Image (cartoon, rainbow, N blue to C red; front, side, top):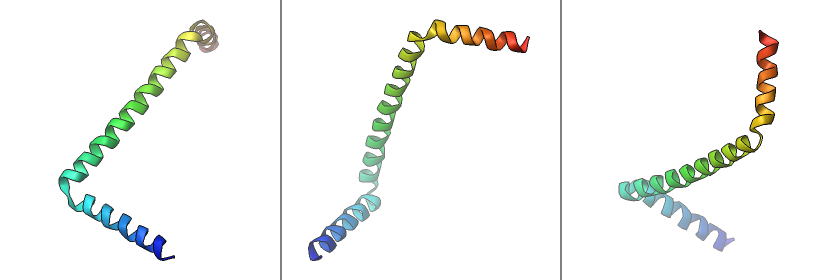
Amino acid sequence: MDRLKQHSLKTQSALRFISQNKKGQASTEYILFVIVLFAASYGMIKLFIWLWQYKFFLLGYGREVINAFI
């Protein structure tokens, strides 16, 4: 139990240090921003590849939807 409590205190101390250290906080936010940016761009690339593969299939459905409203 002591090890768990010591680890918890170390983690809280490290998080407190980052939150009080403006440069550390900015660096952490920048790293997280870059990770989210890469994840989003990867998702968009996968979406465009999927759309390109099924473009004629989707265009056919799009034409049917437009015809239904006209």
